Image (cartoon, rainbow, N blue to C red; front, side, top):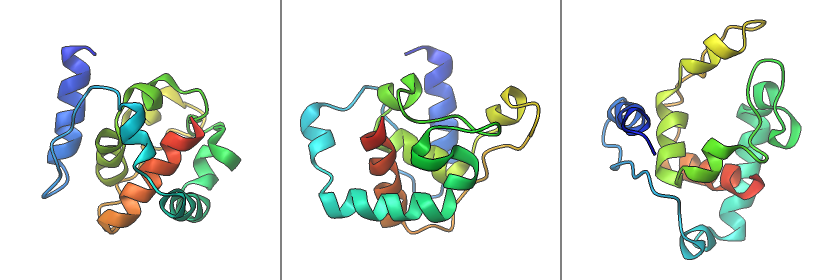
Length: 126
């Protein structure tokens, strides 16, 4: 992971008050297994309500947002890093998806349990 990538993740974490420190190492198999099936199901439900319009059915992407299936960033980013982007938003999408130049909105009002469940769901479909 590059120094620039670390800085981006840290900046996203700072945008969220009380955010946990963002690590840049991929999660171990044990850490991925820590999410219960109920947590992943909750995350899937939240994804359908809040994310599918941009990220597509099953997180396969669309003309306005990237997919998560097979996405290298999702694969190499831990749940805390994904959570930081969910809560803090991201501007890079507006540059990449010129047809619909909309940045990833911040969802800072989501409960931490919902953010965590959503992040675990995103990891599970990768």
